[in-house]
Amino acid sequence: MMPTSLVERWIWLTLVASIIARLDGGWLVHLLALDPPAIWHGQIWRLVTWPLVELGPMSLMMTCAAIYKLGAELATMWGERRLARFVLQIVIAAAVVASIVDAIAGAHLWRSGGWAIGDVLVIAWARQYPDRPLLVLGMLRLHGRQLVRITVATTVLIAIFGGPMWFAPELAACTAAALYPRGWLRG
Image (cartoon, rainbow, N blue to C red; front, side, top):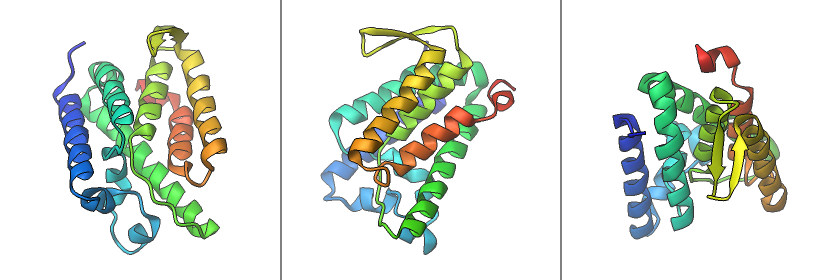
């Protein structure tokens, strides 16, 4: 499956932003990260930019691989506009939920990275193709229905060990993708 222009631009944007953020002493990641107090003070671009900067090489490769494989298949099935709308809806909803939880809890959440993107694409792909197998990490063959459960369970497990507040955006994104109305996915 050849990537669409949206998928290619998305991968390049993630790669370039992540590399610049690694080399610039933290300026770009601090400008783009999910930072609820900054959002409440008008920096609303952070609602959509927080997943664009990956801080580690393995997570960057995994995010780009998910965009390349799953994003390309969804873009082919749905069209680029629908894929972009779906991802933006989930990313914004996750950021808003995490910001509200942050304000209520009195914590100071600060987050960047594409883990949420990977979850969202895996869940959307799995819900679109419930009976289709996917080889995960080259060793585990799972069907769509299994992928949703395993993706949600993995995200919850990481949140338990890392702290639910720390992983709030990913938990919110995962939940939103899993509960996204079926008719909107197929429509």
